[in-house]
Amino acid sequence: MTTSANDEKIIELAASARASILEQVGRRIVGQEEVIDLMLVALLARGHCLFVGVPGLAKTLLVQTTAAALDLDFGRIQFTPDLMPSDITGTDILEEDPTSGRRSFKFIKGPVFTNLLLADEINRTPPKTQAALLQAMQEHQVTAAGQTHALDAPFMVFATQNPIEQEGTYPLPEAQLDRFMLMVDVGYPSAEEEVEVVKRTTVGTQAAIEAVLDREKVSALQDAVQQIPVGDHVIEYAVSLVRATRPDGPDAVSAVKEYVAWGAGPRASQYLVLAGKARALLDGRLTVSRQDIRSLAHPVLKHRVVTNFHAEAERISSSDLIDRILEARPIS
Image (cartoon, rainbow, N blue to C red; front, side, top):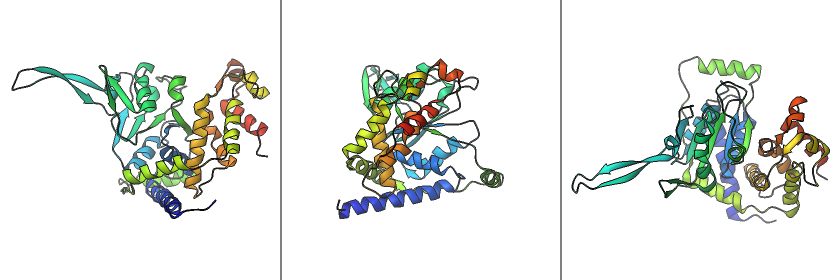
């Protein structure tokens, strides 16, 4: 495969963007390299990303810092139990023309009308309000009072979530979870990283962040991801992993048939391939390998594989089952 001058320019832009964003984020975030890499994959693939972890792991700060490094419109919603759908999408208000005295409704846009939306602690609000994001995430538009309002491109939702076992939380419905391209687990830092965190956060100052990527460059990289060719053997491998998660299907492994209530849908196959393209570009390649697909299987599939009560009783998680699928589907 030959590489054109334009291809080389895109590869150079992706490498530069990755290095610059990592540098800026590293000014405030210690460690979490894999989390940041997956966030960049979602960004370039035009996907939404859900960050899951206990409180205090800098999930919100990570998204805020990334937004500061991008010259994009940024909005933040703190999800609470009393939040209403109109607090997200916007509402109609009755206005009176001071000249004619005529009254008419005017739509006041909500915080969802932005490029990068931080949905902070998304599982702190009831499902009715969570669902207010569904149309925006899938169709990039909002319908209110019978009128449809388009969202500006690019539009992405980066959400944070505390584990659903904690009090005062509402598990996200499967339809909402399926809108997220990636679910990223944010774990505890190492001892050395935690020492550095304490040093940085107890001095009373916070490092300044510079914008290193504008809307035009972000869109160019997202368009480039869409144009990366993918071999049939890679697509077939991605589909085989997804089909192996469905307990009633002929491709399911024995553990899936025993422990899964239902598996991932076709959107998972699409997201595996798109995320694989983004990862390849970030690595400086214009070809997607089956290893790219394997490396993204967990963040793409684990929130789409719903375990049954047998799995809960034996403490078998969706991640455990994805490991078994990967063992049964090696790269030949």
